[in-house]
Length: 342
Image 1 (tube, rainbow, N blue to C red):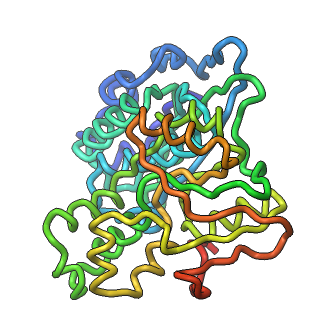
Image 2 (cartoon, helix red, strand yellow; image 1 turned 180 degrees about the vertical axis):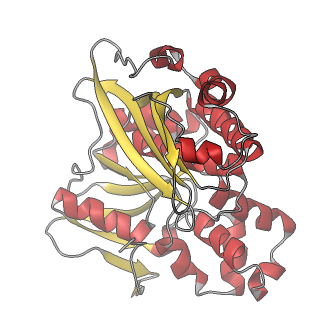
């Protein structure tokens, strides 16, 4: 089977759509890296740098679940690749390339695909992660996009989720909750607090939902100084609980230390319950990590060098008790620690 088979019943739905060869040449071949073999073969060729391990990750995004069907096509592409680049960043891996599988609904148009390819190319260029190949097929339901990304780390240096140690500081990059609030803006634009947002904050929060900003420039610092790491995709509280549980330790999270953007601060000041949404909503794609105290200054310097902010938000503890979440010394209760598909 060709790596880019366009099923005949998809193409038959609109005779003006390009054929398979034209589609590949026009939209995908320009994005291909050397390992993609110009998208003329049945497989990609990946050669990790000498002395490096190969790191792989796969994530799927589905219309109506991870994005709205009428979100901008270029933003959908950026999200599809960005969530995978974020996973590589959390492992301390430098991107190598990616495979794209896309199931197109029957009403797809060439204009939509052109915008999608433009966004995909821009995200791939920023992430230095070229297209290697993929598959296109018909969807009987909504648009489905799956990306498999490949990265490399110096042999034995991948940063695991399972490495948190008692006494480690818990840190996170960037700001938390922006995408969750951006999603609420997208879904309930009539909410009173949305109308009160400044134009700048409104645009910032919406963009953080639409276009993740993977933190790949931090990988060298993460490899050098972190004991454990994962990206924040399903919600800060829930993802931290997962990482501590996987490491066989406990911990304390101080909500008042969680970094918030000016947009999130304005929204929460008008509607305080949004603080819970911010720390449980997900889609932040910031990097959550633990590190020993004696490496803190070195890590701060490494992140300043790549212009990525970080904040200390808690501490890893002995034992296997559930994560303790406090706000200014009081227990912070949430209805859910993170997003769940099931």
